[in-house]
Structure formats: structure tokens, C-alpha cells
Amino acid sequence: MFRMFLIGSALLLGGCGQEKTSQVSMLHVTPYNLAAPKIGRGQPVLLELGSTSCRSCEDMARTLYRIKKQHPRSAIYFIDIRRERQVAVQYDVRMMPTQVILGGSGKIVYRHIGPSETKELTETLTRFGVLQ
Image (cartoon, rainbow, N blue to C red; front, side, top):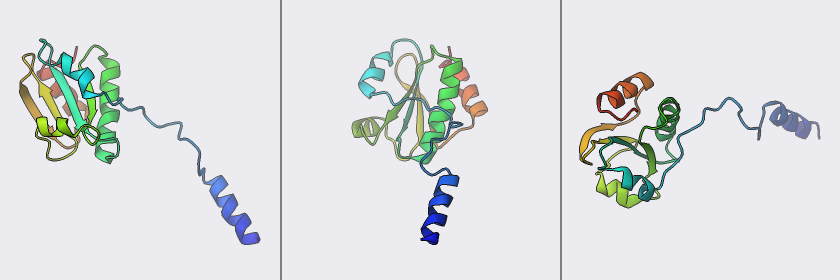
């Protein structure tokens, strides 16, 4: 009985089941059919191709959320390629996360595999005209 009390107390004091209030928001998943009409319309687009079940992808989604919050008119989309496998094939994704920048004409102008730091990613998005 005492043992059960100790286990229960440890779980309660350890915060088991409580939400983390300091967790940073993530860029929401966008279905590809909602992002596709923006591609090739003159404005460069970033597609973050990953999955919500991938830790590095989640880290990138948090980084992109912060960038998108500072540049709300920028075309930045997180596509879950585990749900939309045809997108992974279309953009030749070999590893997650993969970032693809499409120029104003819709052609790939930049590809990066793996996570990026905020500063590096911001510089790249600025260089390719994604940030508005």
C-alpha cells in the first residue's frame, strides 16, 4: 500500500499528464492542395516536407512558426508527406525534413535536407525572396 502511495505521489509531483505551458507553437500542417495554387504565381514559396511524427520535422515547424509570425505574408507551408506520399514522390524527398524553395515560376531553386538554425534559414529565405 505504501509503495502505491509513493508511486502515485511521484507521478503527481513529476507532472505526469500535465501540459507543458512553455512549449513553442509549431507551423500548422497545410494540405498540399491548399499550398499548390500559390506555386508558380510570382511569389517564391517554401515547402517544409516532413511529418508530425518526426522530431527534426517538429523542430523545423517550430522554427518556421517563429519566422512566419514575423513575416505573416510569406508563403511558408509545412506538408506532412506521410499523409501525402505523392508529394514526397513529386519533390523527390529522400529524407525528412526537406526544405524546398520554389521560385516565382514554380521551379525548384533551393533544396536543403535536415534541420536548419533560425538565422541560417532566415538568411536563405531572404536571399530567395520568400520572406515578405
